[in-house]
Every structure is written in structure tokens, then in C-alpha cells.
Length: 432
Image (tube, rainbow, N blue to C red; front, side):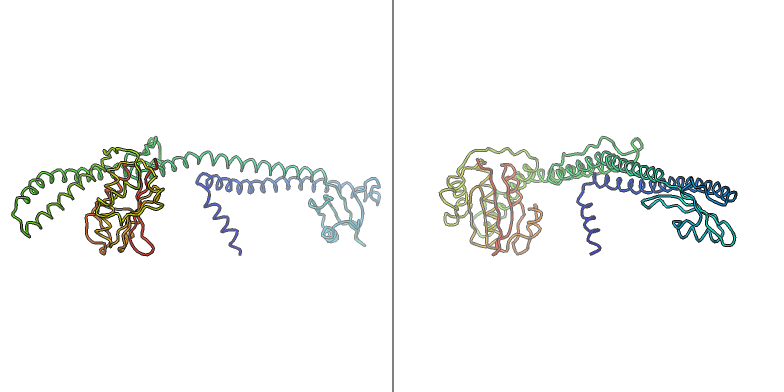
């Protein structure tokens, strides 16, 4: 139970932004310093008042004693002096009876005062005392403490505001760096922080500038590597295209036989791979321009599903009437490429039946196989990576192209696994 408030305070502090954390820590530090200085000043002022009060009481006691020794009595006009006064504090009485001249200060009671006492007479010994009220000094001390509290609160408030102001630039620069890093992670490799203060001797040691420079350097290096990879992919595909055309022509001239069919099948597979590589290269270069138009989604997807190797029986329109009346703004050719790749992936790596379903502006392709592997669900499709062994072999380009074409037409492809088994791919299209 004792850790509850500490845990809540830590959770509250962790929930604050960097700007307010710095402001809170600076204010707390200033508060500790202000309290320490305030206590020192308070005790110094209290010692000053106490010393003056004690000195005044001793001087009054000396005057009263001189008068008592001359007359044997206390001045009746001095009501704060007396012999064996019953109101004398017990510690002061004991010290006086022990032969000491001392004082007693009381600043905390409702009637603040200072006492001074000394012994007089020998047998029996009496206590001569004087009492001086300290109401004015106590009021001055209270006012002094109030001024200390107000001054301390003002200092802490100014420290908090100053900390928030000084840390606002740091917080803003870090937020900018985080936003740029997110853009880079989303594929915008041209994004740069471009910090105005480059790290070096001219600006001293600026950690934020060093971070910004490191992120920009990382983005530039990553961009160069990706561009080199894209250029290599495009060059390889272009270089293979010409000899493959000749190889295809030569395969067609071979006499009919089983080996000829095998050769022709491999040539077709190699040509398909080359065309896929060229398409990936164009998508990476972001040179593809969609031919957008308004289409009824139901009839469009039904015809695509039939051409993709399915049939009308494998196509389902949820709420058939409304599905056929749903209009989307899309590129029909690219949408066919997306759905064909998804259906082909389901037929190649999944199990029958393969279902194509239209619901509103969503097109769902589902198989009843082992489902997508975990890394694909977490990170999305990767070229030349097919995932789980039970889903078969392939180049991994089909889903990559589907996602790339979806981005071109403003759609989104989401991958998941059905609860009862099977891979599910959903294409969400923009409504017209």
C-alpha cells in the first residue's frame, strides 16, 4: 500500500511529455533550493530577533536589579518585573535558583515574550525576573515568513515557465525528428530533417543536431541502397527480356513432345518472372499513373473472378442488389491485376475452395489452406519471400505487386487468417 502513491506519481510523470517533465523537474529542484534557502533565512532572522530580545531583557534585568539592591523592592510602575513571580517558566526558575543569570524565549505561544531572571538574596534565595512582550517581533516574523513563501512560490513558478520555454524547442525538434523517421519508415526516402544547426565546433555539442544528422545520413544511405537495388532489378529484367523472346520463339519451333512441353512451360515461367520484375521496378520508381473511372464493383469483380480462373459459383456478392449498385472510383485494369494475383496466390499456396466476395467497397479473396505466415501478417509481403513451407514455392512477387498496384489506385490490401483456417486478403477501394 505504501508504494501506491509513489507508483501513481511515477505513472503520472511518465505520462507527461518531455517538455513538461523538464519543467516539472526544474520546478522541483528550484522548490528544494528555495525551501533550503528559506529555512536558512528564516533561522537567521529568528536568531537576530531572539538575540535582540534577549539582550533587551538582560539590560532591563540589570536596571531592575540595581533598583532592587538600592530600595529592596521592584519598581511598582514596572509591571513586567517581580520577585518570585509564579509565571516564571520552570526551566528559567531552576536555572536562577542554581545561581545563573539566563533568559527564556517563547515565540510559539499565543502570548510571545522573553523572560530574564537571576538569583537575589542568600538565605533564602529568591528569583528576580523581568518579562517583555514580543507581539510586534512575532508579527514581523510572521510577515517575513509570508514574504519568503510568496517569493519562493514566484521563483518556482518562474522556473517552471522558464523550463517549459527552454525545453519547448528541444521537444519540438524531437517531435519533428520522430515525424520524419515515421515518414522514412513508410517509404518516403526523400524526407529529411535538415537541422539548421549542424553538429561541430561552431555550435558546440548539440545532441539533437547529432541525432538529426544521423537520421538524415541513415535515410540517404538507405535511399542509395534501395535505388541501386531497384536499378539492378530493372536492368536484369530488361537484359533478360530480349534473349527470352528468342528463347520463346525457339521453343515454339520445337517438335511436339513431352520434353518440348517442359521447355515451353519453363520459358513461360521465366517470361512471367521477367514481366513481374519489370512491373515491380516500375512500381518502385513510382512512374505508374492510374486510369481512374467510376465502375459498378459487383459486375466488375465477378467478371474478373471468372477470368482469373474462377467461376460464377465461386463469386459471392453480399446483399446482391446493394453490391451491384455500389460504385467505386478505380482503374479496372489494375484492379483486375490485384484480384488476379490474389486469386492466383490462393490457388497456388492455399486449398480449394477459393472464394471471391464483394461487400460494400471491399473485395475479399479467401482460401482454405494453412493461412498466411506470421511475418507476412506483421510486416507485409516481401519480394522473393514466400513464407511458410506448407504454402508451397514461389517468387513472392504476386502479393508485392498486388500491394503496389493497390497503392497506385488509392486502395488498401489487408492480410489476415480466418478463425476456422485459410488465408484472407481484403482490398478496400475508395467509394465514388
